[in-house]
Amino acid sequence: MKLTKFAHACVRLEKDGKTLLVDPGSFSEDAAFEKADAILVTHEHQDHLDVDRVAALDVPVYTNAGVAAQLTALGDRVHVVAGGQSFDAAGFSVSAYGKDHAVILPEWGVPCENIGFLIDDAVYHPGDSFTRPDRAVHTNLVPISGPWFALPPAVEYARTIKSDQLVGIHDGLLSPIGLSMFSRFLNSDERPYLGLAPGESTEIN
Image 1 (cartoon, rainbow, N blue to C red):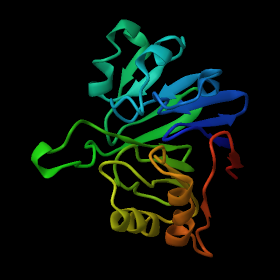
Image 2 (spheres, rainbow, N blue to C red; image 1 turned 45 degrees about the vertical axis):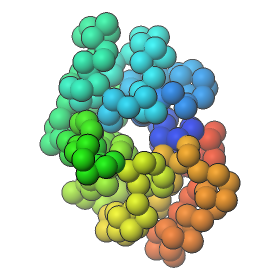
Image 3 (tube, helix red, strand yellow; image 1 turned 120 degrees about the horizontal axis):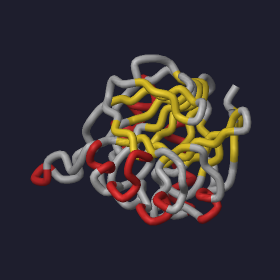
């Protein structure tokens, strides 16, 4: 399986001639939308969901009820899933985790629903949360910026999930200086950190 990172929180997975697109949002390059056999969306914020460009792709979308409410024009192409459920999307096995977006400000409470996706028991995308899967993974996608982000829980999240490698996501707000800092915080001999730039790929074995 091949993982390609795009801007911010969007990744594309490819295997056996099929393509799964995760969190294609307003920051995502047009190239991210060039091919997809199915789409996963963790939550409704525009940096994870570009409604118009998702609607233009005639493929199934798997997401939570909050996102589905914004995609009613897509009809039965939209499949509502919740944490604890597993399903098949374009030949990829997917399990959903959690239900809440991370808190941005205490007075706002939980801003919306959010589900993480474990794909082929290998790649985990948490969306805007530090919700953890219940098993080891090959590649753990770690959010490294955002209004809700804090470094200590990000490091704890990365350390407590057994994985072969880490890939930074949710990085659209960072300067090159900020991006360069995260190898120091997250890299280790047993769990290397990959700071992939948009368009760069890694193989999932």
